[in-house]
Amino acid sequence: RTVYVNGEYLPETEASVSIFDRGFLFADAVYEVTSVLGGKLIDFDGHAVRLERSLNELGIESPISKEDLLEVHRNLVKENGIDEGLVYLQISRGADSDRDFVFPDTDKVKPTVVLFTQNKPGLAETVKPIKVISVEDIRWGRRDIKTVQLLYPSMGKMMAKAAGADDAWLVEDGFVTEGTSNNAYIVKGGKIITRALSNDILHGITRAAVLRFAREAQMEVEERNFTIEEAQEADEAFFTSASAFVMPVVEIDGVQLGDGQPGPVMTRLREIYLEESL
Ligand code: PDD
Image (cartoon, rainbow, N blue to C red; front, side):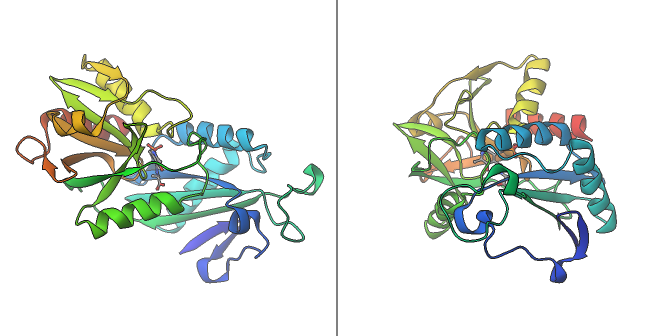
């Protein structure tokens, strides 16, 4: 696999980043995951805009233009022959001369840019009915910034696996915030319900697209909080992310939803999303 590091295309075995990189030492880095279908990048613009926002919020000056970033994405997809898969992008505040909590002076900051691809044949066809458990959301308060602080989401997924489930929905003050790496939804009486945007959740690029398509298709959308109990009594539940598109959730904390099969609203949204994206 060819990867990209700070302006260079290299075989993955020859690519490296300093041990003093702040991404490594402090999780002082942001990332994006863009899906590829039919060799085409899905919603690159949305991901580029969110990346810029994440960098701004952390005061990291982007070392690469949006146009160059698009070119690197395209080059890697081509070079690695990706038909269906993902492009991972990470930008950190770069390597300091030593470990220091204080950010390096602005003129000394050289952000580290890393991109690699992941080949995922069958990505568009994969629909897996997901079982989730609820776990307390103890992440930091700026989940709208897509940082690489993914230890707790990772632990959440491990707790789910240990409980015989697939993923975890995070709950704060009694309400679902989002999934470990996706946005969460329920459907009740044909109405699509999902938490409104705030600093509490990541502003999903897939979420924005799916809600737009839903409204265009005259489906009712309500952006508000919901509890695990309400979700367990819903007609359907699902999640969205760039790596899974629209995925059915059929069990929540051991309670099966409806007949335990992917529901019609979620199925329709997935179809529309894939059609419109391709
Ligand atoms: N995760 N919420 C969280 C916490 C996420 O990590 C993600 C994405 C989403 C969905 O956002 P989008 O639709 O823009 O992918 C919501 C990516 C896919 C990941 O970490 O691999």
